[in-house]
Image (cartoon, rainbow, N blue to C red; front, top):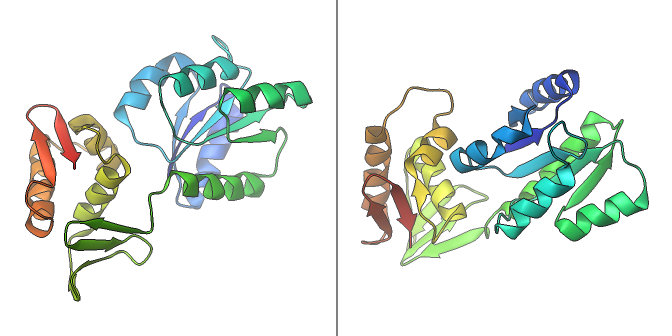
Length: 214
């Protein structure tokens, strides 16, 4: 799982990031919310965690802008605001959950896992004569199991999550090879691997931009 944490409290942000790392959750942490447009474009997230009281804008405004732009990723609010009016405003603007500070880190972990399931696609996905079981991580053509590399599987999951959309090269690189110096040729190699098992024309190439799973 990968989450985006927008929290300007440096101590809390760092502590949360380290705690979630222990539970195999990658955290992209922003303490300056003005970086959000660039980060949203570059990464694919399972959950967004947003504090309401920030330096340059409010968390409520961020939620509103994201939802109006069509961004559908689940949002967990973390805040010191306890009043019912604040909760109501966040939910009306499109938040999915609300957690009041101070909170137990394990409770946050449980909420993140629950929210991430809302982002997930169906357990069984069919593309032509190919059946993909996301829970057991197996691919079948008829009764025959097809094996692909771990990296090709991760790329397939990303394309399935964004099926019908153009997934740009930068998003793919940051999703599969975060913090690594990897070029577009690596993407092309694993796209070729997927094309060997998927029906022809399932993946459309947009030269210089990215790929779309049809």
